[in-house]
Amino acid sequence: MHLLETDAAEGVPEGFLELPASLYAEDPAWTPEEPAGVRGAFSGANPWFASGTARAFCIPGLARAAAFHQPALRIDGEPVAYFGYFETSGHPAADEALMARVVEWAGRQGARVLYGPVNFSTAFIYRLRLSAEPGAGAYFGEPYNLPGYPARLERLGFRLHLRYLTQRVPAERALLARDERRVDLERAAGRGYRFRALTREQWLAHAGELCELTNTAFARNFGFTPLPASMFRAHFAGVVSRLCPVGSVAAFGPGGDIAGAYVLIPDYSPLTAQRAGAARVPASQVSYDRHLPALARQRPLSCVFKTVAVSPRHRQRGLSGALMISALDQAGGLYDSWSVALVREDNFSRRFFEEVEGDPRWYGLYSRRLRS
Image 1 (cartoon, one colour):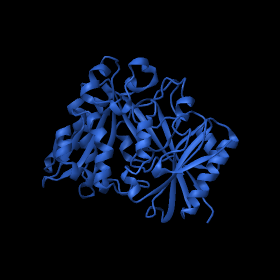
Image 2 (tube, rainbow, N blue to C red):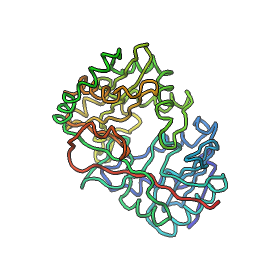
Image 3 (cartoon, rainbow, N blue to C red):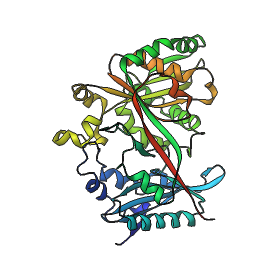
Image 4 (tube, helix red, strand yellow):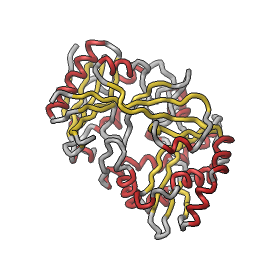
């Protein structure tokens, strides 16, 4: 058992890219990780490395992880580090050796707490799936992992720090909630707000404003660090092609500025998961224009309320609910079900739909305090 490591700005160690495919080989719900995308993330081409440092670790065939550090990042006033890209075969000695090295590296960077799983930043993929309904797949872009991972992290000294949930809402219930809450949209319109479909053209025309909106609206989110314009463009280039241009919506304030936005993404997982077999589409190649017709032939068709952002200048005016109502007005007849994705359990927005279908899927973020 040999632990390999690299400066993550220069690539990943041997076995890092191969491990997930071996662990999930028989899992039809898994959307395969794309090695080219991982190589790109762990390279000098990733603008994240302009201010951050990272280290990648792997015990070939057994376990892998990466550790990330931004010198300016503080959570509750303390310097922190993240770990991510965590995958393990469940070999106890390998897990212990791997995480001991991650912890050692994070401590040498001056971190006092280690959080994860987080892939580079909480602006990107993070959290671990804790539970889901029997036979559950994974919505497109959501965290997915083997069921034993939470217990393995706890054995390694981590504790559950925050919980999030995803709730599924049948179409008829979503439209009923829209009608019951319509006053939110009417009040916003009465205050001079205008709601427009967030198409690709709108996104590109307002990219600078949307970057500013993201940074200001999420400034209080857990562990969020502002995205430079270059990183925003790089990360969201794929999002633009995948979003639902009918249901995604932007709110313009009385002065013409973008006051808020809601991004909706169809659940492409029936096309990208391993169960699609020879017809599977790599996740990075999915687009609304090319793939929605094929997706729509595989009913039921689901859509995910992915990200909502409201500018601090326009809060306390019911815009979050108004954006959701506008989205359902525009796209309510297209989908068989809706899901509100990865909402923190204490977030008020989860109460928009009073009735949901089945139990929620739960996700968690873990932490471990490091020695001073």
